[in-house]
Amino acid sequence: MAIIDVTVIPIGTDTPSVSRYVADIQRILANWAEEGKITYELTPMSTLIEGELPALLEVVQEMHESPFKNGIERVATNIRIDDRRDRNNHSMKNKLASVKQQLMKLEP
Image 1 (cartoon, rainbow, N blue to C red):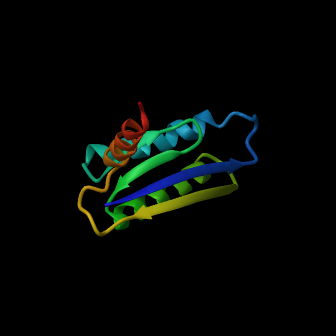
Image 2: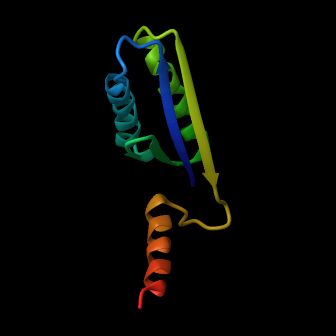
């Protein structure tokens, strides 16, 4: 299972706000999640998506295309991929649990 951190940036919007475009992308992700192909989490600066790498790359392409379908003529998409194949339990939830476990070791 892989995790992708993705930010889609529509360039040339009428206002500084891009929440409308983010909402459209979240609808795309909700559809993929309903089909059981991914899980995702919106953060204030990006979206985290986990699933099998081929599906993730497909959904990232759909996310990238979304602003174009809404009249934007330029889009910059940043992606960062964490693909760990030595364990089956590599998930966002398990990564956070591991860090929390390490923090507990540091507390008096």
